[in-house]
Image 1 (cartoon, rainbow over the protein chains, first blue to last red):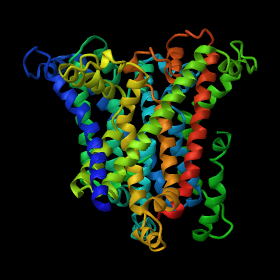
Image 2 (tube, rainbow over the protein chains, first blue to last red):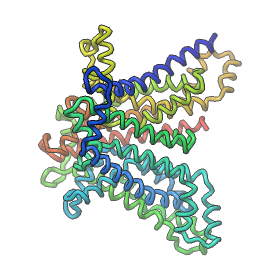
Image 3 (cartoon, helix red, strand yellow):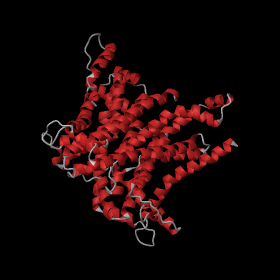
Image 4 (cartoon, chains in turn green, purple):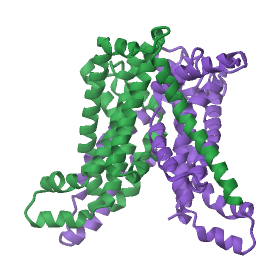
Length: 264
Length: 306
C-alpha cells in the first residue's frame, strides 16, 4: 500500500515537472506559428531568416564562439594537464578560481572590464576589433567553470602519468605529448565543454550588449522590443541550439558526464 | 579576493617539491612556468577588473579615499529597494525551485516513476538548466504573456489571469520564468544524492521500529540537508546575479541590483559613478558569501555520499 501511494505521489511530481518543461516550449512554438491570423504558417521564421541583421548577428556570434572555444582549449587543456601532472597542490586553488565567475555576476564583470581596459593605456573599447578581445575574454571567463571542469573530469579518468612517460620515453616532445596523446584522450571532455561554451556564447546578452557588439543577444533584445511573433521564433531557435548542444553531449558522453558538467 | 591574488607564487614551492623526484635533488624547478599563461589571463580579465571596482568604490569622484559610497548603499532608497528586490527574488526562487526540484528528483529516483520518465526528465533538466537569458523571456512572453498561448487558452475557458492579479512583467512573473532553469538545476544535483541513500539505512531503521516518517526526519533528511542547502545557495546566486531575463521581461520596471548597475554603466542616472562601483562590490560580497557557504556545504555533503 505504501509503495502504491508512493508511486502515485511520484508520478504526480514527475508529471508536473514535465509540464513545466513542455508548456512554455509548446506555447512558444504555437505562438511562433500564428503570425498570419487564422493560419498556421512559418511566416515568423521566414521574416527572421530574411533579415540581414539576423544573419550578421548569427555569423558574428558563431565567430566569437569559435574563437572563444579555441582559446579556451589552448589555455585550459595544457594548464589542467600540467597541474594534474606536476602541480597537484595547486588544484584546490585552481578549483576555487574556476568558481569565481559564479561569484562575480556578468554585469559586474563587464563593468570591471570596461573600467579597466576602456581607458588609457589600453583603450580597448575604441575600435570594434579590440573590443572583441574583451568580449572573447569575457566569454572565456563565463564558460571557464564548464570548460575547465570538463577537462579536469576528463583528465581524472585517464592515466596521464603513464601516457606522458611512455610518449616521452619514445622520443616525443612536450608539444607532441599534449597535442597527440593527451588531447585525443580528452576529446569527449573537450567536445562537451566546447558545446556548452557554444550554447552559452550564442545566448549571451550582457557582455555583448554593454560592449556594444553586434551579437545575437542584443539583436534579440531589439527584435523583442518592436515585434510580436519573431521573438517566439527566435526563442524556438534558441531552444534548438541548446537541445542540439546538450543532445550531442549526451550522445558522446553517454549521460553521466553530461550530468556532472551541467551541475555547477 | 586578496588571498586569491596571492595564489600564483604558490606553485614555486609545490613544484619544486614534486620536481625533486624527477630532477636532481636541490635543483630549482621551473614547473610553475607551465601555469603562468593561465594565471596571467585570470589576473588580467577577472581579478584585475574586479579589484578595480573595489578600489574605485572607496574613492570619491576626485579620487580621494571615502566610505561615503558604502554609506549610501544603506541610505539611498532606490538602492535599498533594488537590493531588497534582488534578495527577495533570489530567496523566493531558491525556495520554490529547491522544493519543486527536490520533489521532482524524488519522483524520478525513489518515487517509482518508470525508467524512461527518469531518463527523459534528467535529459530535459540538462537542457532547461542551460536555457536562460533573453530567449527564456521570449518563451514565457509567448506562453503566459498578455496575449500568450496559455493566457489565451485560459481566457477562452473563462478565466483571465491578467484580470486576477497575475502579470508576467512583475516579481511573480520573474519567479515563474527563473524557475524554468532553477528547479532543473536542483533535479540535476539532488538526484545523485537521493540515489546515494543506501537501502540498508532504511532497512536498518525499519528493523529498529522506525516509521517511514521517522526515517526521513532522523536519517535521510539530515544526510541530504547539506546537498539541498548547497544547491539552494547556487539557485539563489544564479537568480541574484541574473540580468538578461529580468531586463527582457520587466524592461526595467522592476528595480533589481543587477539592472541598476546596468543603468549606471549606460549613463549615470545615479549621478555618482563611484556609487555604481559600490553597488557592484555589494553584489560581489553577497555572492562571495553565498558561494563560500556553498563550498563549505559541499564538503559536508560528500562525507556521507560517496
